[in-house]
Length: 77
Image 1: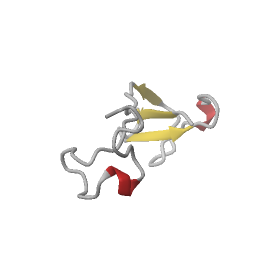
Image 2: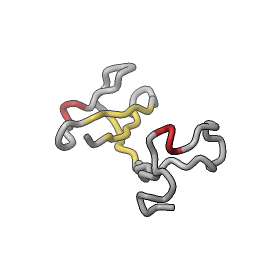
Image 3: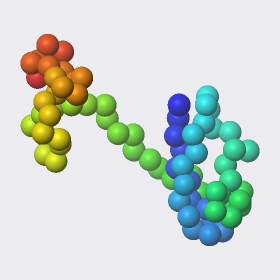
């Protein structure tokens, strides 16, 4: 499901809109002030990566416990 980021031209709030198939401008209204005047923002999608037990700031559980790639069997390690 595509996610689009917008900034309200009236109040300046930033918000996301989830579109089921494609961007429909009728769905884009500011959740704070209901304005239909907006600027579409450039958003960068987060890459899908395998869970690693040695990544910084990650929980102490191993990737096998969290359902990620275990022991290199997925070909990523």
